[in-house]
Length: 466
Image (tube, rainbow, N blue to C red):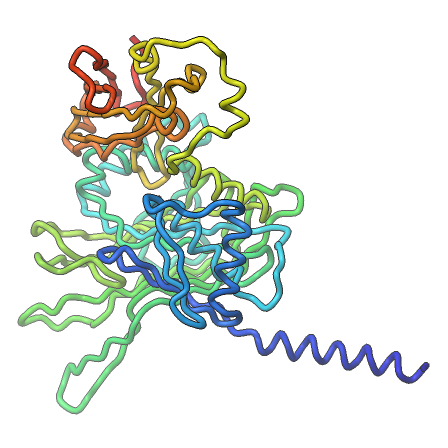
């Protein structure tokens, strides 16, 4: 027995090591926006097991509605899915590689690393720098930062600034016209794990007969993430390497390199919650009309010249449970939810006039770090009664370039509300934008409708209280 015990320990350690070596690196989800379909090929478990893990974590006791999207098993290893909420879909895709493992585990700490790449015109660059410079520096929202190794003369600007400030700058009319988002990569990485992202292609050119040269186009990110043990809001990216190769368009009569490479290396890049690093390159890239946006490409433009690349990096630390809670919260905001039986039984017994309920509209305005302004409204759910929540309501929104119609139940409008379509760019510089809202019972008479006016201030991204 004395000999057998050490032998078992050795054998078990060998088997653990062997199992670890058998586990393949997770794959990446591929999405087709036109078909509204994403695919993921599981590397370590069956597709059915992967979907089972997804449902148990994200959708326990419920299923996706057709409005939300779908998740289904196509084959032994392949799943197809689509989520209508773009942010939910992005975070969901980041979660998949963690679940694609032999063992079911909940990492104690995770880092959501977001890398955004933009193409920027000279006008857009000047506008952004002026906007940032005019921000009050005493709030600490915008401070210069020097990255250690910036590729020698390839960087025009390197800043660390608050994500709210960056979102405000990117949300202006000029920025929306002159700055184009080329790609966004969201990775979910366990603490102390390696960053590994590669998506690109090899470009072959023959500058002279008999000579063939190759260059790498696309995006590569590597390094290691580490959450500061004294401050969970501070994330360090160690040995951070970012390489983005842009395919240069062929120009008749000119000899150009096939790929322009933006390369950033930093032994220790510090990222704080709600703060972004922004790096703008000096590269000049010509755009040609008709070329489509894509990885390593600069695309469709109205004969505009995008002269620079802008790279924005953010990191947020989560516990696994907090990350799942965030996903579920996003889902609840986008879902056509219903009151539970317990909630309905607790409603007051009195009735409320329907026009009084419809007049209780509460608008909201949010802004993403990428500058997208999200507007919408809800109806006061404290006015919910058993005799009104199932009524279907016709909703019409007009103004600010928005023409939107929908039919939702009153409980949908109370719990999830309605998100407005994007506002027209020309309205983003207005001092105030008037939105006309009309609500009436489905197939109701004109006398039953309620008309409201909402006043929105694009500069502060808020609704004005009358």
